[in-house]
Image (cartoon, rainbow, N blue to C red; front, side):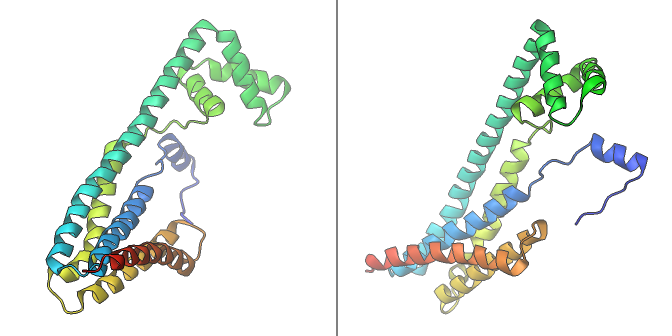
Length: 236
């Protein structure tokens, strides 16, 4: 569990500048998908009996094209969330200007659901509605369930692409360097990558590292086995 200061200054600094969700989700998402999709291509091509050169070309093409596609999709999705947040904020600003009493009652209802009652409830409602930014922030969270931390679509997209690129290159490396039993090495390195990603992400969860690693390795292995089986159907 992360430790932090409980001094008055430490609390003020931490609450005043929340970190947000960071890039953990983007990194894990990109790394797992990069490894799965690239090894799926490697397994499918190897299962079809094609040359190592074809494996390298298709693997590299997938890492670059699919990695960029994922990053672009992640950027677009997060940007859409950001735009929707700003759109709803504009609506709330308009409502406060045109229907202040109704919005005051909404703040009161939100606070009452947090346990405030009676005179304290009315005083808290008055205090919050005296500050426009605090008023809007409470409405965004209490009425729409939207936090006040702006997402960073570009940072998320870059993280997704880099993690996809790094992890996605691993299944291709034995073919790229012309190693013997390249497919066997690729499979072993890929499973080890799945295991490592799963074990690493358990650091940020309550799941034991071995269970997280095993689940990730099972998911990736299933995708690879499916691709290899399909490739075998077209063995030349």
